[in-house]
Length: 103
Image (cartoon, rainbow, N blue to C red; front, side, top):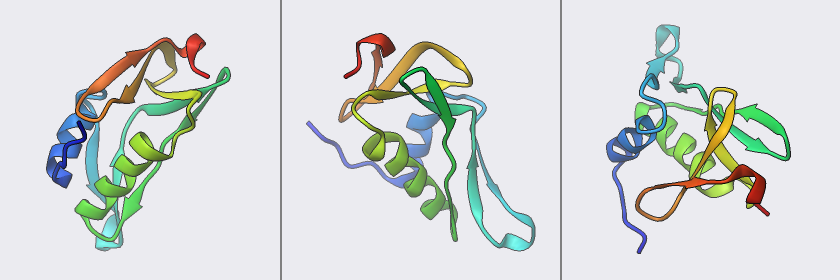
């Protein structure tokens, strides 16, 4: 079951992983961006996720796409550098995953 979420609902779902996540605008309103400690972990490495857009909606949608659709099958989201807990989007909720078992 894959559910359709508004951009606001997607942002709320993302804050379930990182309660300190914030939606910010650059000076002079040039671009919106998502500020977070979420990283993508894969193969012993961890890369910070970054997404921005011309509007708050676009920034969240871009971030959501990275966090749920474009990460590799052997990767998962982690909070900060804590690779003891990984998460993947499972069509309607976040699912904990064992990072060592991802292939």
